[in-house]
Image (cartoon, rainbow, N blue to C red; front, side, top):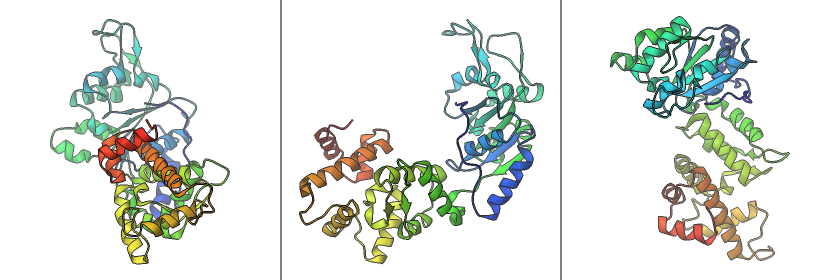
Amino acid sequence: MRNSKSTAKPIFGESKATAELAALLEKIAPTDVSVFIAGESGSGKEVLARQIHDLSGRSGQAFIAVNCGAIPRDLLESELFGHVKGAFTGAVSDREGKIAAANGGTLFLDEIGDMPLEMQVKLLRVVQERVVDPVGSNASVEVDVRLISATHRSIEAQIEKGEFRADLFFRLNVVPLALPPLRDRIDEIKTFVDHFAALHSTGSTPVKVDESLIRVIQNYEWPGNIRELSNFMQRLSVLYPGETVSLAMIPLTMLPVGLQEVAARQNEAEGLPQSPESDGDDSYLDIVMSARGLSPIGNNELSLKETLNSVEKEMISKALQEVDGNVSMCARILKVQRTTLIERIKKYSLT
């Protein structure tokens, strides 16, 4: 739940579908029409909602984003509608809900397909009457909000199963927008790579990706979509700031798990070492050291052991960050035993 101003770059890309989406945004953004965005997780639904808000006459007011699937059912009503003092145990004071907080601006309801039916009834009243009834209050509060909703689910299928109200969907789905998954936007991969390289740059020169790595990226399905690609480019920006990164430079364990398989197949086709665990360890190490400006034959300030320790520490540290400190998941990514990883974490005093 956020109300900060957007820093996202406007819709960009080179495909016909992207051009059509950008043209549609110019038409609908200045209006107050309700918008329903469908798309897989990580495809950029909130970014699109923010762009609609930023292009509208409400851009100077609040943009409030609520993930309906991330809030416990027993807290969702209070979060959305607010409550008055004494409405329930723990309600020690009045609290403004997210809908009222968006008054004059835009309310983005992400993953609305996860909203319980009883909440859908209350939201329908907001849409129809433009009023909010705080929990425990007998007085309604008038609100003026633009509603943008989004989901990765099939709402039509949920309606058929009785899990989503058709009347609410019809009112939210005035203008439907569909965001295609990244795997259907292969021609725009390079554009996204350059964008995220600049966005996550840690210095004056963004990291660059050469053709060998671009080919791997384009042959991966990206189940996490644009969010997954953004995280990957952020990882490269931290590990190789200002460098031109090739596939041969990257330990496969630094790639998303699914991308490792694609990279391994391409490495095999091009006669490159598969991973640090393969029989090609020495040549792989030479490539990694060379990419880091190190010499494998001794005119390097660090010894081989010190260099390996440094690389190992860096890999473990970055992997831990990627999984928010989950040791078991980190061990799977790095392809080591959990007990071994714990020993290394203690060795390098990592947290």
